[in-house]
Length: 77
Image (cartoon, rainbow, N blue to C red):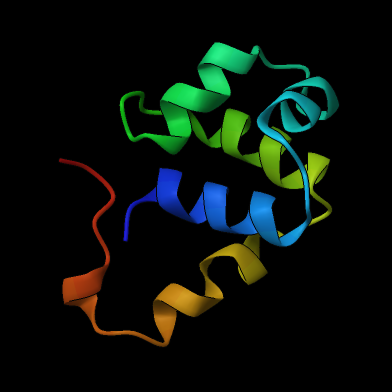
């Protein structure tokens, strides 16, 4: 699973639209869309802004990945 897919999963679990996440994280809607579709790499700072906007601790964001095999983790294409 890629980072963008995780962002989308968490956003949906928080019942947020992309627009709401964009506003809460002070990022643009097109940028959120690109991230979720894995068409844009994001910096650690940007990821932290997104996680903060969703009230997610960074360690919780990556926890599901640590419980799966390394083959399922795909950070980059």
